[in-house]
Length: 152
Length: 102
Image (cartoon, rainbow over all chains, first blue to last red; front, side, top):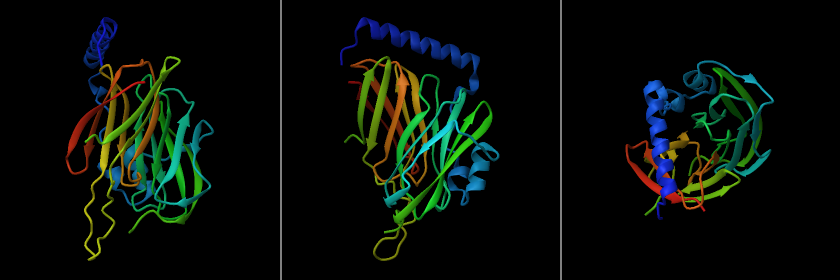
């Protein structure tokens, strides 16, 4: 792909801005993979390890999940939120061996709307937790699984 | 061989990105035919940058399906721009790839 003058200028401007930000906020390094949270065996401890506490149910967190999943190995999920100041969004699958499925950071300029596909072993509650402005907000939805997605 | 297939489309000042990795996302819970546990091997972080700025960063666990699908949207981006993808595996393996915005 050819780099025209405009994109070069933009790239330089962007990297300059990034360097400036780095100087101002040394903690800009985004959250690393949280081993304690991803290996926790129950949702409460995973939640504690990741976000340090429980979450308040909120209508501003939207979780799109099928009511019935025929194949638990591939369950499409979408999470979004219209809250402001969102840091990250996490997905928990309560009855899985390790409930924390994924965590999405929300850098400035990125829409708080993510889709992915997950596995679930059996019928379970799925909870999306949004960390915004230092608080936790959640939405929960039950997915009935006819064929489990774990095991052979 | 590229791990990720990227479909990114710039529209109305935003870029819509859909990507899929060709990866088994082995959980470590499965056993092979002789009953031995198959060791876990999964993508644990995926980061996408545009023009030097991180636009997507995900930490993934073993519950993410085989051939992980990830979709997101960010402000900016134009047709012909490059998206830089960096990934790591729980095994310590890592790599970088790129995709174009269409």
